[in-house]
Length: 233
View 1 (cartoon, rainbow, N blue to C red):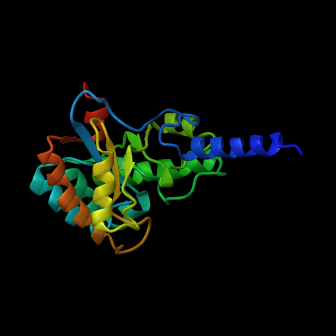
View 2 (cartoon, rainbow, N blue to C red; view 1 turned 120 degrees about the vertical axis):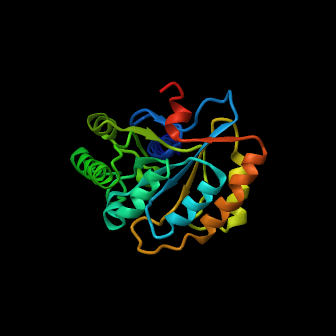
């Protein structure tokens, strides 16, 4: 019985899965997933927005004096330009999360570049911000993405801890985040649900409301991604 081939195939599949979505994978280009460990500083990031519920999260962050980074989808920015602008006006950083939130696996570099460039243009037009950071939808990278990012001027970021807040309750989200917190951590939550209109993000809002003061009480300081990852800039 030949056990080598199946074992080799399984290993190749596992490696490819990690290469595509592993938080520390650099197979498809350099991608940051945490900041320096020498200070109790963390970055809170939100994907998929803006949405009709983004203002609720902005209110919580403002009340606590906490900055964050919002990875916005170009199509959502075009639908809710005033909400996208409010994120920038509140002093938060804006990143690129694609224009249509596609899975980039099996897509051509031409497709990826067109989608990211369209999002970049929409975000700049409606918010005045030119994103520096990029987070791939679903965290999925693919062949050619590194070159696309370099041509557009984007830098990839994953996460240290993701909240699974699209399916978990607030208590579970908080437990996940608190169990993974450490100096330099990058948290990933969502202020929207892909391209849905009026998405239900109540559990995320409640988790943020309770999570932020708890982390502040533990002595953590929040920064935008640029301040966390590029502290001298």
